[in-house]
Image 1 (cartoon, rainbow, N blue to C red):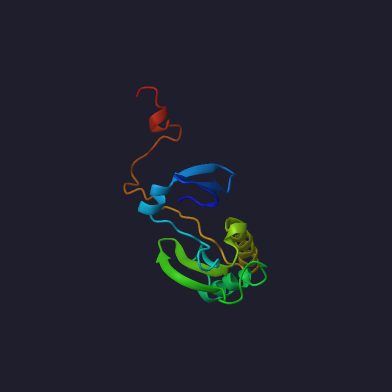
Image 2: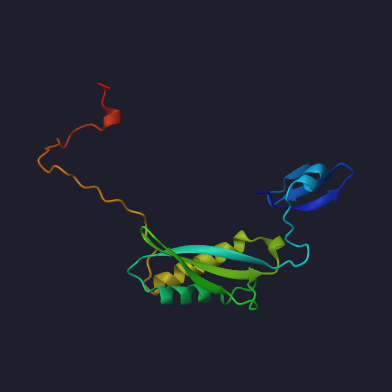
Length: 161
């Protein structure tokens, strides 16, 4: 995905400047034959989504409430439509939630708003004891009679291989 602002319209190409200041020359034919998403064509408002995992030990209702609260005082997040949060799915190591909110000025950046809200979510979750789970795997030894030497080299470090 490319994101940028049209700087110039030429007879054969369009100059698009991205967030890093890099200018690309996009042939007009590409604009005709490929799909183009215009974030400001009829309405500059865009909805942002932030996925968040919580532990199965935590209260999803409280976490959903905190997700909305994390968006409540951000100056760029719209009040109407109001921010919402959803329980999206049950994963292997936790529940996947999602905060959804609208901004009216994506040209001023979207990742900075995401970062602000993520930091607020982290703070609120810490204050309320909600844990963000980390994927873990359990390893079981099926034959406890196998006596492995404690000083054995890892397979890829064994010089005999």
